[in-house]
Image (cartoon, rainbow over all chains, first blue to last red; front, side, top):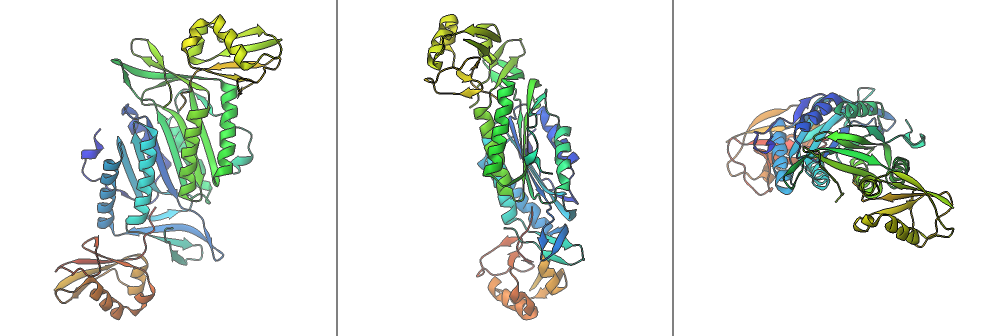
Length: 149
Length: 149
Length: 79
Length: 79
């Protein structure tokens, strides 16, 4: 029950995050009857059109050790800032097709405000601070490197 | 694909909202490749302790027609305020046990900011404006009426 | 003129019924209706509630139209 | 002294390798290291990147310790 004390869990998963994984994660929290609110953020790969070419997939790579350490630091800082029961972060590595999910952030708290504030904080911190690199692949096998805005 | 033009969908469902229903809803959005971000809020029934007695379940009732109309108005106002691709709201009626989910708000947009802002807006509007009434049931068959804070 | 009065949540426990039909004077304001309500159910004095006329929360000085549905709504607790 | 230099994302395409070992002077600052980097890979001049020394983004005037890992990181695009 006390996620806070667990050792750092691996955030990176190979390939897309399935809706079933999300359902399983939600179901696991139904025994925690002190939770009143969950907030879930999902990043999904968009079929952006760039110079007449359409993105087919994003291939994610990372400085994995550095990224996992940063995910851990961000988690810890969120537990300090917000009164949370649970927090889970999953991020894809490798190829994720358009329409598939590449980021899953899940916060749970007694009250809605904490869950929502923490979820937003986590998403912004992850986007700004974690060395993950997305290569947007086009249908003609060309690519471009994505930059977060 | 154009949820905006559909007739008002029924928000109320009988009993708890299952994790599988949430997974199915997420999976349905994987064909919408203009979506970059989803935000999901889940309300879960807490086993609050009140005067030494523990909540076992909440039994929800509502002025159903008025509530469905208000859900519809809130949805429309969110579509006006935020640039959303999709929006779904489900709320339980009847008995929902502790640990089970009674509210499912799901927003999808091109970018994260819109999805998160809209989700929060919807949750606050629903809590403040919709005539839903929660009866907290204790183990000794007594009850008290919940009031939103 | 006839109106339908509906009770919800905790209010339903005070009135011990979910719906009834009243015959009220024309041009009755919502505020005046409120006084009748408390006369009939004195225990409502201790309760917090709002009145929705035909599903709308109106100002207390508005008058009630014929055939209206008047809903007596305790504090909301959805979500 | 020996250091390991690692390249990521778009930078890896410029250098055409993911990792190499350099022998550098002691007390070399991160900023001075940067100059060597551009000397070896002039195309990096047109790229945006940060240097992480042993996984930390440090000030450019800090010196690099022996056996350090220096990561050349293009703009992040996770999520």
